[in-house]
Length: 378
Image (cartoon, rainbow, N blue to C red; front, side, top):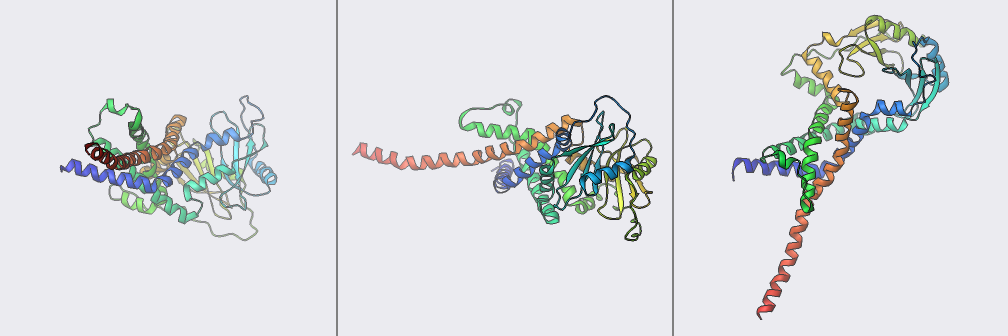
């Protein structure tokens, strides 16, 4: 047996059994990831319509707006998502007693009023399931290993195709009958498999960040992951800085940036303000300003243009995984790859099962034919 045939046999075995045993978990995470990819678009679709559609220049007292929003929801703000383009609706994620499930309040910056809430609890559930399997750190660990399985299965499938004398004519050929599952599996695997490999590889940076950063240091310089210093814990009744003061401080730190996301701590601590600048590839922006939650002073400014090669690679992994490159078109292609994973599992199972069924049927028919032959001769 030649080396090429032996290698193909090994790859087929690994790809087949890895897909059969881990396929259902891969499909669950890939399908949920396809849904999560469209999170911004789904949130906008399910949010109340803006009070006015004509162009306006928002002028909001965000300290007062913060109080109105928290009075409306009867709880504190956890995260702020700013709109893009002509949209004037801000989405405020509010704290709840449920694990990873939030209330989402929509605020119109043009009308300077609360529009209502968006029913996104199911999306929060889906996001936490995709990230952590609804099991916090333990779930993220196992989600990472499912990503490893997807990566190996995808690489195995692509490798099998490459060493099997691929041709353009065979690539687009869909035959009828028993050959259809194999042809569909190959076509879907090559088209969607490359994107699923990217998704699985980038997921490792989210599930095993320290391990991946250590590995990256071998080929690219990467400074230690140093967080902004935490301020001394204030007295219990010390008032927190207003949202408007935090936004003003972040805007002063990066004057040419646009605020896209604000992450507020559950108690006292640092606020992370993600900002978008011209040329950023991530829709949420590639720059982060850290603001003290009591004094509203910027304690650190992390500009993407000042990052080295290693840091840029790390940030690219998160942007790729969440489909933030290339706008809606890339999100659509990326999300479709997640949905196609179900087709890959079904057709892969048929490719494995149908030949076994055919051989079993032939084995049953063979003795009866022998008896008929003996009977005819006698």
